[in-house]
Image 1: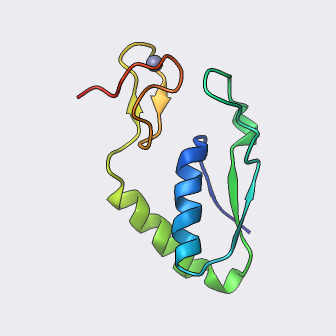
Image 2: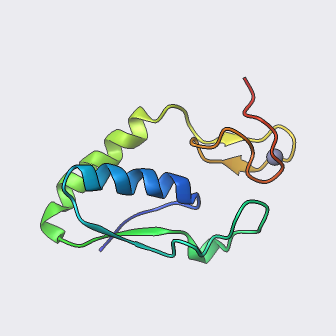
Length: 101
Ligand SMILES: [Zn+2]
């Protein structure tokens, strides 16, 4: 079943790594659907993480919730172009403005 999706592939990859390290098998779908930096992302093609073994659902959800709580920072909005950027981004993915400090 689908357990996680986010418009930012970096965020999805982080969650995937986290789950993999905990022994939870997931499948990544739509990995390349969002395009690269500077391209418009298709809203209906966010990368998705699908759980292989449904018996691991509660463990996976707990890990994802922990990861969200412990993220270095929240998603941030670019002061220049107002684009929303994932917490993993150091610069705006759209206009390359650095994260405001
Ligand atoms: Zn920007």
